[in-house]
Length: 355
Image 1 (spheres, rainbow, N blue to C red):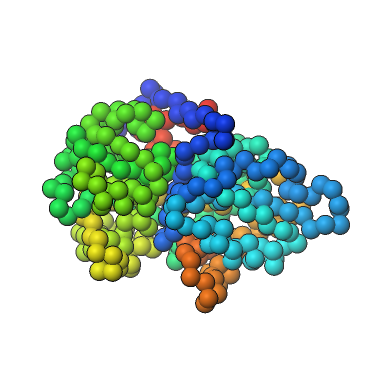
Image 2 (image 1 turned 90 degrees about the horizontal axis):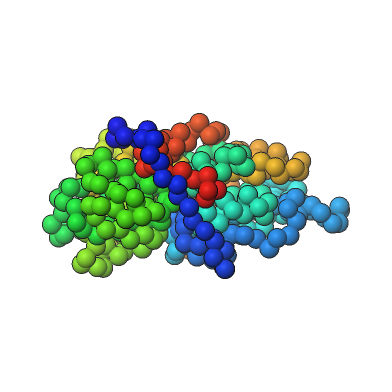
C-alpha cells in the first residue's frame, strides 16, 4: 500500500437510487468458482414484515429473508445457495426466503430498511454498514479465509507490466467490488499510475470500464481495445498458468483456494491469460445479520451458520449448476475487515452517504 493511504483529502462516494431502486453496483464475494455480480431484484424486498415475518399467525413458522447478491451475471445464485437454505431450515424452526439483489448497495439498503434479516454481502459493504450489521462469520473456501485480486492481460497484448497500462483501457469489476476494483486501484496506484477520482470518477493515467468479473475478463479477451482486466482470482486463475502464480506470489501459493486449479481451463476454453499483478491477501466476504432483528430465531440461525460443514453445503449428484463457492464459516468480527478500511482510506473514499 502507498504512503498516502491516510490522506485527509477524502472524497465522498455517493450513489443514488433511480425509479427502479439502487442501481448498477455490486460487490464481490471473493469466492472460488462462482464469481461476483448479477442482475435480478433490486434487493429492496416487498416491504412486508420487518421483523423476520413473524407478525400475524403466531403458530406459523417464522420466516427470514436471506438477501443474495450474485458476483457473476451467469450464476443462478438461488440454486447455488439451496443447500444452505435447506441446512438452516433443518437446524432451526424457520423458513428461509431468498431474495436476489441487484447489487451490494441494494443488499445493504435492504438490510438498512429492515427488509432482510440475513445477507451474503461484500467486505466493502461491511464497512459501510457496520452500524446496522452483525458479522456472523467469514466464509472460508477449502480452509482459506482470504482470497486475492489479480490484474491480467492477454499474451499478445504487448503489455508486460502495470506501468505499460498508462493511456490504455482497463476493464474492472463493479465499482464497489473489493477484488475487482477497489484493491486493484490501490495496486495500480502503488505501481505509479495516477488513478485520479476512480472509481467514482475518471482516472488520470488510464481509462476504465466497470462490470462484473466474468464480463471484465471476457471483454478483455474479445476486444482489442481492452488491455487488461482486474478481477478476483476465482475468475482469472483457471486461465493463468500455475507457474506464473508461483513466480509472482508465494502468498497465493500458500493461501489461495484457487492455486490448485490455476490454468485448468486453458486447454478446454482456448483462452490463456498473462498475469500482471497479484494483490495481498484479502479477507473473504462475511455472512451477516441485521443488528436490530429482534427475534429469538436470530441467535439460533447464527449458531447454525457457524456450525455448517462442507457436506451441508454440497449439492446432490444430479445438480449441474455452479457449486456454492464456500465450504464453511468461521468466527469473524469487524476487526477482520480493517484491511478494507485501509483500502478505502488509500483511495480517499467514504461510504457514509452511500450507506
